[in-house]
Every structure is written in structure tokens, then in C-alpha cells.
Length: 268
Image (cartoon, rainbow, N blue to C red; front, top):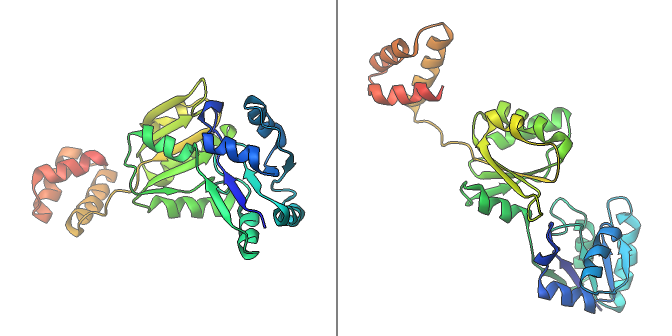
């Protein structure tokens, strides 16, 4: 019985492949690739001639059975176009099937857009929540945004270039004006990190390349007295009262330090 190697590949720069990954890709009997054309470029660069077969979203149902048969005779490697299989890429069904068949599954780690983006974002890396791609539209998308808006952890998302501006605008609407790092074309020649706030991000981001978004987590909930102050400030400001008068009134009404209420008003 062979082993299933889940091999991470470079996310852009082909020099980021590990020595272990190259050895495994040379030694296995078969490589299951999300797109054989993409993987062939990597293999050609490093003189690897192992046979490739496609394994992707549209053929995984029947190809899983074929790969299980191949694993009965020898080792097989699973790769995606970039990064690690399973993380917003095909592979979960094959890995589960291998485990159920008592086939050993071995991970070969490597480059990751998630950890790369967290490292350069300047935002807290612990804890973080990786949410992959948002649902494309409709109720599922709105509910997912509302759910993620409550998360205290730093949020990491993937997004396609043609939707990135829309997503950033919707994140601003759902999350408020949080800090964000828009990471574009990671490890590639034109890598770009745009550190800004959600209110400005959609206007400054080009719609080209692969995107990883790192968004500041939800702030801790306000103490009860400050929550009441915030609600009262919103009410007064919406009624047309000036910031100064609203701060003075709320500070007096709730017996809170003037400076504390002033800082709260600035955030509004």
C-alpha cells in the first residue's frame, strides 16, 4: 500500500518550493494536479518527469476512485496550482477517502499565502481566522459577512480580482472602518501590500492579480456604561446636535469622564 503525499507548491515564485517537496515529487509514482499545465511548469523547472493526472472540482468524483487504486500500488502526490491542497483548493474528498481506506496521508508543507499575508500585514497574527472565499452573492454572502463581523480574531480572506473592490466595499459596510492589508500578487515580481482602512481600500486597489485580504478583528465589546453613552451620542448627533454639546450632555447625564466620552464621540 502506498502513501498519499499532500504537497504544498509555490504560490508565485518557483524558488519557494522546498527540497523535500521536489524529492517527493520525483519519487512518487503519480502526481494528481489541479491543473496539469500549471504543475508541469514547476516540474519542468526542476527536471521532474513524474506522470501527471488531473484532479479538480469537475472530475474528483470518479478520479478519487482511480487514485485510490493507484495508491494500492505505490505512492501518490496531491498538488494544487499554488499553495496547499484543501485550503480553497480541491483535495478534501481524496484525503478523506484515503484515511477511510487506511492509507497513510503525509503533509509536505511549504509556501502559504495565508501566513505570508499575516506576516507582512502589520495586524495581529494571533489569533486569526481563515475564511477562504466569501459566498459569491445573495443571502449566503450577507449572512457570512454578518457572522464574520463578530469575530474578534484577525480575518484572512481570498478574493478574485474582478470582485475585490466590491468585496472591500461590502466589508466596510458590514464591519465598519477597520484596518486592512490588501496583499496582491504575493511572492511574484509585482507583489504589492496596501495597508489602509476599509473606508478607502476599494478606491485604491487595482483589479489585477491574486488577492489575500487581512482585516482587523472586531473590537472588544464596550462596557455597559460606554455602550449606553455610544447609543445616546448617536441619538443626539443624528438629531443635529454638535459634537461638543453632545459630549457635554452625555458626560453629565451618565456621570462619565468628559475625556472618555469625547474619545467615544471621535470614533463615531
